[in-house]
Image (cartoon, rainbow, N blue to C red; front, top):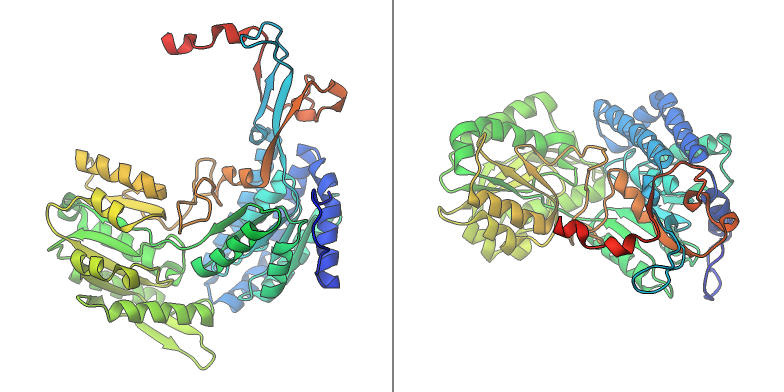
Length: 511
């Protein structure tokens, strides 16, 4: 694949130039692989990662401080999604094949033969995440979905787990090679400046990122400011508000608190879906229950290490800002211990604040504290939760509703409608942490949750980010891609509009 426009020559250093040139050279051959060839390659990667679990999990634990149980589950999640995408590729529905047969009797005049499908965009740059060293890193969902789409992938490794990233990259590269994929279809690079340089290169056709709002915005602006702008899919910041009804407090308060504490404390609160703000009725009476459940959690988990010194610094800064806010009441003080290298160990902190005080200090308080920290917002009686959503949130990965069993009302309908306007996932009765890898998952949302609110980074729809549509008009069968030919050698679903059908358009609406 070659760049479709004239741009200044690449300024990459020789090592990076070799990587990008190889990805560019591999793009056409990789895009032309059959669905079963590509699916077999994804399965080979999954099998290789599983085979090296005893090596990779301890290495990840050493570099990130995350527990081996969590990391073992995360590695399984990584290989499961690779296998899921293998099935997606073979099924072929993601190609969205549409065929309009030539029609001399078309109501608007003669219609030519038109055949539309999705094709790979080309080489993809993936910026790996810190908090998921497997599932959102070198072989994570962005890599899996881009490879499934038929795009070469270059991963910019996260500095929080460099040895794990390098080793995972070696395993993935070897598995793809053994499966017969073209050389250059996958590579790992390191360094912030190196990642930016590759992002600017005209041979890169799309990029994905998981990280902070600040870094994501910088990279998104670079992608948009190129001579040929490219899609940039960034998952950034989210506070994931939760709304608890009066009936929920009256009937299942302890259940709500236990779910809340588990969601805040898991993985030291370093999850993009951690509930940062929980809106509760004034006079909720939850303080003692929360304190007791947090104490139970601390007895089981103890101090948990934050991922790296940068995470520690950011967490401490936002925690201190909120604790110093006017009207903030400490429910559970929690702890932070920082060593000489800047690594932090924490236990959960929970505070409460009146809605009016949050409104007055929203600029400094309504930010993500990436760690085991959450804010109860006390809402006066008669206040519409739907109005609160509209007033305080523009975009979030999730909005959660905690109601009583069987509770349904016009207020809840309004809340769900308001939540739909700002969130990628609306949850009833559960908690936002734990993002299932499924066909129907949506892990995205309006800014600042993501840079593209129509995309998802989890679930099978994630493949759409790395595809673009092409229509073929009046081409002979021999020149058409296999997926849109009449003999359909890949056996993919084809939506076919036969000649003469335009005469009946509109009849379904009147039936």
